[in-house]
Every structure is written in C-alpha cells, then in structure tokens.
Length: 66
Image 1 (tube, rainbow, N blue to C red):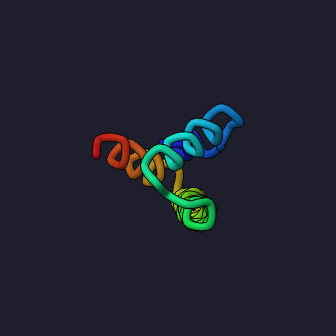
Image 2 (image 1 turned 180 degrees about the vertical axis):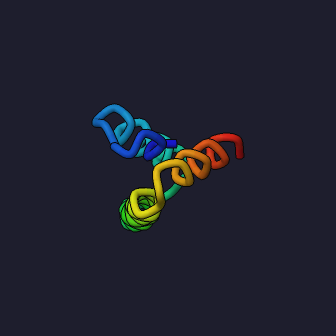
Image 3 (image 1 turned 60 degrees about the vertical axis):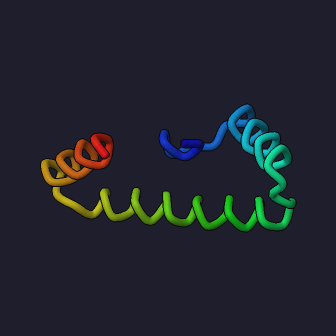
C-alpha cells in the first residue's frame, strides 16, 4: 500500500516502521523488505512505461481491480 502511488512519503514510512515494530519485524528485515518492494514497484512502473499507451492504461486498470 505504501507504494500504491509510486512514492513513499514520510508519514507512510513512519507508519510502516511502527507497524513493523508492533508485529515484531526487526530493523534488518524491515529494510530488506522495503528495498525489495521498492525494486518491484520500480519494475512495474518501467514495464508499464514500455507498453503502448492504451495497453498500459488497460493493464493499470486491471491491476487496480485486483
């Protein structure tokens, strides 16, 4: 959810840190997961950018529906 808009704001990052602390995710795991999710989000943006405009719009709409 944090990367839904393609950017992680200060408040979003802080909320995820607090939730991670509450559920027992240590700092190293949290940072590792954050980096993996950021890479995946960037890959999705890159893939959508390489599609023709109409196809990218249809893919984005389908992703939101899921």
